[in-house]
Image 1 (cartoon, rainbow, N blue to C red):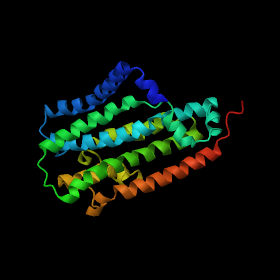
Image 2: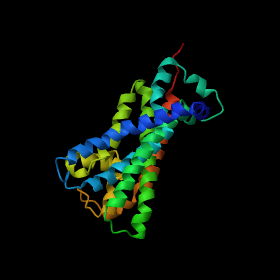
Image 3: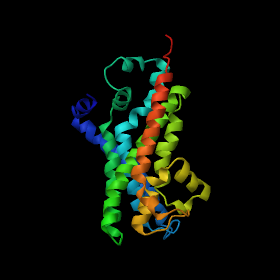
Length: 254
């Protein structure tokens, strides 16, 4: 319904999608400005950071396209309109995700894809069959990991009721973090996003394997091939958190 509504005004859709594209492009413009003054950042060249940026942007963009409306859940919980979703013969999670579905978010995916395409053309990577296969696996698994973060953040809102900014800290904040190489961050932060909230599996670990770069932590090389497993585990845990949150929901009482 929301897609049909959006496409009824194609010029408006084109402008909003371009606006989304342009707004996200400013992040990469900031990186370009940095490289107008330095030759490397954390020991990484511009094309290498573009590779990290593009992979993070596509992964987050896919999750944001599918589940970006989850941050509206807190408002529905506070005003009691979540009740209307509970009586419909469809999963509540799917209904919340589809609420005000914004096709304009394709602009972020497109922008990330263009930056990644630039990196793949410029970089001199020693390609193997494993590395070629790892790139699409990284993008899809990264999208699934971000999706799990969206769902877990939405589940937290059943108890906090106004926690959309907390959720954004791990979703939008996470993708901003992953746009830069891990070498520019403190070791404790890198450990946290590797072993606690495993955002490093979105792009850092697999991307550094493709680039032939060592990971700043002493971890086995096979960690680079773990994103699909991490994505499944994260989605499973997020699903359990969602079910627990939904069962605890007691409406507004009004």
